[in-house]
Length: 146
Image (cartoon, rainbow, N blue to C red; front, side, top):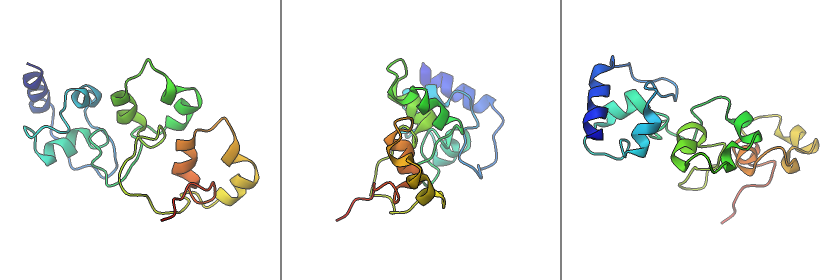
């Protein structure tokens, strides 16, 4: 039944152009994820990409689909048991630490990370490990050595 609902929702929604940024074009992607839309063979790669690119992790990297994730994490979102893992993955995958796969490159995303480190960012309890790893992996010492 849910499969039918998802199909109807996808068919009835105007088909969006291939995303150039990692966002979801359908507001129900979290529900779709919880019901296996992203892993289902019933839907093509293009359908998943055009409707739920961020939620289905089709963006070529581990990213958040909501720009406010660092704020949410600071307020306890990533550790809040009132939200499911699927909800956290759909919204704040990188910030909440749900990225998997081979070790990412050992570098900082922000060129100011050495300054942040000097100001205590890497040990500040107001930031999660996931936030620090996503932003200042090298400066904060999160690189894994072989």
